[in-house]
Amino acid sequence: MEPGDQIDEAALERLIPRFYERVRADAEIGPLFNAAVGDWPGHLEKLVAFWSSVMLTSGRYKGNPVVEHLKHKAHITPAMFDRWLAIWAATTGEETPPAAAAALQAKAARIAESLQLALFFRLDDPPGRRTA
Image (tube, rainbow, N blue to C red):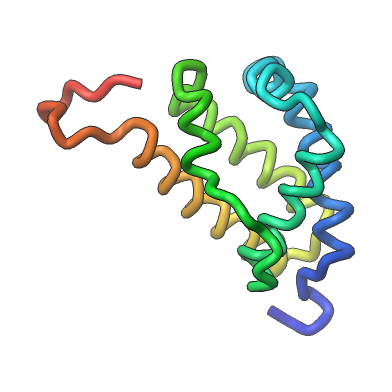
């Protein structure tokens, strides 16, 4: 990334609320998020800390995303990850410089893949019989 394309705390503090504003309004995934999150200001602070830890290695996030997502497993489908990633790509593309957007999108794709493996992959499922 070029120096002007760097992701910093201020950029994350703008990006994350804007992104989740779109998520909450989305017909496909908004209802899940709105039902799961009771304290949006607190949740957004936690999400900024998460992305700060992921992108800036700040160590600010203290938590376990897999455990948090497992709490809602009955309501999450693999397609919801695709929708989340599409909204993330659009928002990061609009709100951050191209190199920053690409880095944020690549990291989000890896995180989504890891979460989906944690939520949906079972070794005892025969091949071709995986269910969400």
